[in-house]
Length: 232
Image (tube, rainbow, N blue to C red; front, side):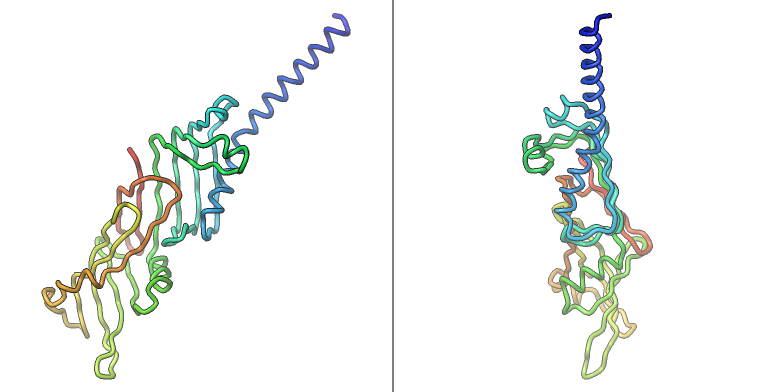
């Protein structure tokens, strides 16, 4: 083998090695960009992990990802804090030009995808203190219902008031609590007394997420809500 041919083979093998090595680094690089994008959207978080399925140069140029997994803890996007969030995205389309020039990987389309999150009653109460500071109430999440405990000043005396009701999903991006049953000083009051005012006493809790998925399930546990967003 001549020196010239040997040099050509070395260059060729070097180019192939660099191409393969750089392609292997694509998924971690895209994951870092996605993480940075989420960090910019989140108002707070404790932990955040992003994993991107392996991809090639052609997929990058076409703006296609086969899968992304995201795990986060204590994260909020301006609404109620999510104690945990697990995201499974499939068949993702994104703006390649924006990713390469601005480092922003805005997602424009999703295949079969799912988000699962848990909200604790502590998070509901934290949001209530921030959004409704004039409402001195404590929320408790139980199996099948939401209860609220507060106090009311009647003739100079603080009277304990308890109410219970349900959380309804509104337009897929927030929960609405409407009280239905009331107890004052341990005595249950006729529901018809408050039927006219129940809607006026309702409180809303936004569930901001960074992806265009509809809220499909709201499951109540003991001290928490399990939420599921999905498009299939």
